[in-house]
Length: 105
Image (cartoon, rainbow, N blue to C red):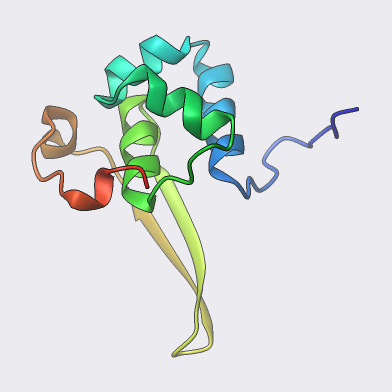
């Protein structure tokens, strides 16, 4: 039985993030793929856990669906918890500035 999550709960896997994005935006896999500029098979493989995408790919999918991506990570060098908010800018929406980090591995 699936665990019920409270609103605002942390999502820890790429599959959980993509499934939540699709559910909240009421998007099909193909609709999300078009918005993110990736093949539908990429969305499917991420959701099924067959592929673990790069952070760039998760960012691309989130931005395509109109989300601001908020990253929180532990910096091993400083020993501090860091925050980074990635907004939606004109360059991201137009597909400019996309690099190799956007490919699913």
